[in-house]
Image (cartoon, rainbow, N blue to C red):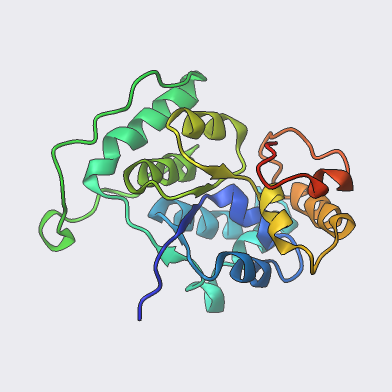
Length: 212
């Protein structure tokens, strides 16, 4: 029976968990193997893992999702009807602005990939965030995302956004708040996403609805 996507993860979120020991096992435990990502995110992981401009820790974090673990993430396609929203995300992130009205979703109510094919994979800065947000706007799935500007955009689109630090709280009570804080500090060496810093282990004792 095929796995069903119940969360969409962006690159930065995945790098955060790739940076910690047993990170993919932790993700499997708390998200039940139901994490999907669009093509741009998977392309970014491949690029980062081989890019000499990135630190060794970052390259290693990306490579955790490749090779033998390449099936860890469920493929979540970008559809043609997602393209207007994807382009809107890219435009707003480039300008540093936020949307005031929803983007058009195009004329497609349903798409048969055998007939219409797939859009070209998004490349360049903010590619992963743009595709992830666009997919979530269509599917209304919750979004696992770290980057602050993209988070603000996604929340303006009324998406449910969860950063890596908040996801760590799902590991309790097997892992203590002090241990969560230690994992968080390892994560930020690879990706802090510009979100406000968690200042200490007591943050992990707050209710899950607490926002960064």
